[in-house]
Image 1 (cartoon, rainbow, N blue to C red):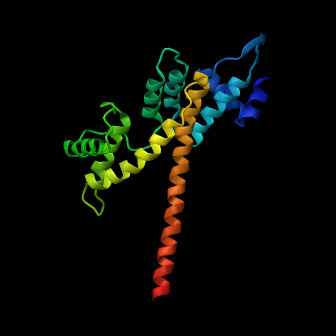
Image 2 (image 1 turned 60 degrees about the vertical axis):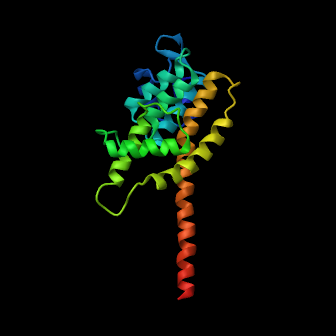
Image 3 (image 1 turned 45 degrees about the vertical axis):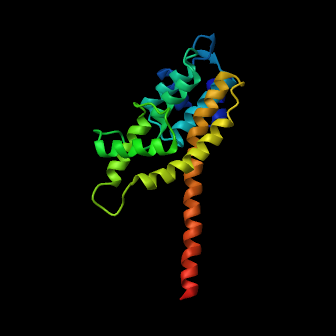
Length: 213
């Protein structure tokens, strides 16, 4: 297929396709004539991944290259691909200077839930520390070990289930692409379901209070 058909199949503008090609985020097509190339289903799939990462995950273009490089590195173990991409696709505050009190709280939470395989340099871990620092600043909120351990316990159940569902016998490229996009998309699905749950239960609660009155 030509670039115009590729753009239509992936539902992205032609200009975006050409930009990804120039930046090396999308592999070049097979040259069939001067200034003419043919593209296949692998290009459609890669474009859809880039779109999901940008539109749903909000991943900056500057970080997309790290994700694509990790996906394409055949020598990089699958677990390392997961950790590399996790460091750049997760939303949250940028890690700041490390606060010893927040570090101690996060360490206690990870110990409580039994997560002893987390990298010390994990960006998500550092982001969590930054959030704890913000929560424990003067104000109505707070982040105790007990509260965070409750959330960690719920997260552990979900993460454990998701990881056991991975079929590592599949083609490496397809598996990794699905893992990366699934992490982004289902992360948003979970956030939206949680928000809907808040709406439902708060409405029930307030209706009950009105009825009692």
